[in-house]
Image (cartoon, rainbow, N blue to C red; front, side):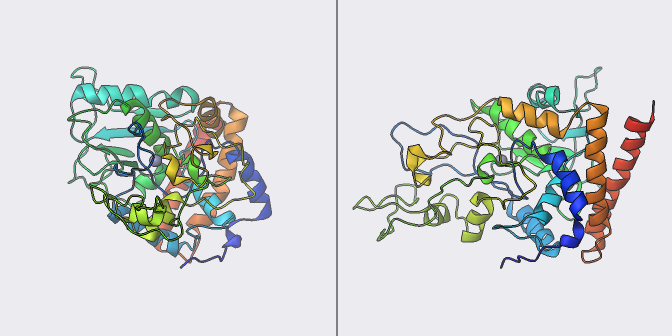
Length: 383
Ligand SMILES: [Zn+2]
């Protein structure tokens, strides 16, 4: 069930406009979602085959996100406005912040490749990734399931299903993830890296610095959720649903509800539905080239290859818009930083003082508020 009740008390009008300036340039818009799969180039002529798994968070984590969302009374989709917008700001790191990264599994060489690739973001975003490289040994920071404290903000594993990452500081929100859990996964990169591993790495690190999926922004993609009228369920060789003998196609609820994804209707909505529009977001043109946009096969769209969301290639590099967005969300100029921190402070204070949510959630945002204050002093007053 979706609640449309807004906690407008979280946001005064002044805050909204101040905060708008801070996020106007997000390259990809989103809210707690994680979805479709690292671009797999389609097999030639495979106009209708979802044989690959789509990207999704592990169910245990998705469940906690859903619980937090419900507790914070933020709508899961549909028109939303303020509440989700607040969450989006609150989840970002602060400009100038150092974000630590730790690995579990994989070789030193793999860690180095991931570190070098991910660091492209920080050429544009005023953030530092600290991979904990020990120059004496060539070893990088590691984390373990038995950790009782977060070894790093970003905890990478290779042994979970698929590719995913939590968004921004959700990775250190104890209501969402524990110190002994990964926040980002690259399935089997330690065994074999796929040819588009750099694009996948940049995409997941985009999530980790607070960006969400381009296809969930505005305007919405024309996904074909429903079956063609009269479609008769027909399974292909892998058990996945395929067009019936009359050529009628399954819609995405049917398609993704079957093997290999087996998504519930709710999960399809969670991962693919448009993010709620917010007057606070400058709805720039859909950036087809964004690293945060995933490749979708033409049959997934009503307009097929003519869909504004369709590209016939998988994005593997940061687009100009990604670079610009990263620089605007994490600026280097002192005045720009001051503006962002001021807006964010108001948001975090509202969240930290919201008596309607559990202490654990308040504490998370309260902790982020303390970090922000410390950073403000350091960056802005220390001259
Ligand atoms: Zn993603």
